[in-house]
Amino acid sequence: MDALAATSLGEVVEGRQYVTFGLNNEEYAVDALNVQEIIEMASITHVPHLPEFFKGVINLRGTIIPVVDLKLKFGMASEGYRKHTCVIVTEFSGGVMGIIVDSVSDVMHMPKESVSATPSFGSQIRTDFIQGMGKVSDRLVLILDINKVLTEEEASIVNEQLTEAL
Image (tube, rainbow, N blue to C red; front, side, top):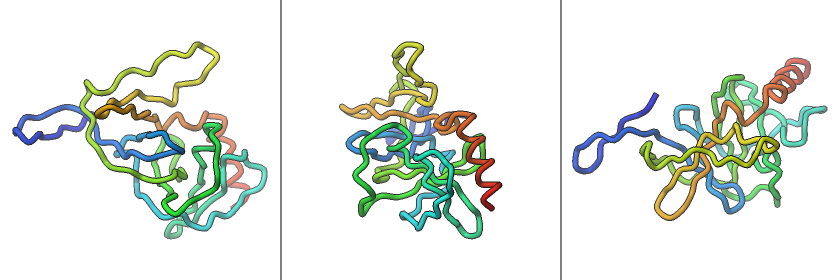
């Protein structure tokens, strides 16, 4: 569903609201409708036998939520967590998960015409988790499809391991 936004001239522009965040020096975004809340980095309880990018679980007001370090998931260099590192609690097709990001930048509206399709890198490179490329001023924002960041197999592993651990 596309959101509508009013401009300063009173006209209505189609588009979506996105929560933008940083990983290293790159800017990413997820649909704001998938974001439950943004919290400070909390104490994460390690769960054995999960892939490295699954940092463990947090207890958020009585709800146990798996936490993924997006830099590790995407194979990016990680120098640890900093002052502005936070967890974006998201809803996705497999339930709820937290994603660790360097910092949250903004909630912004992107009109449809400012979002381009994901470029093709060939069949050997997985890009299904990229929903599009947003053009904001002179920079590009990689828009993630939060439902596809984890493969079905990874989501299944997490659900099985969490069920066994709890």
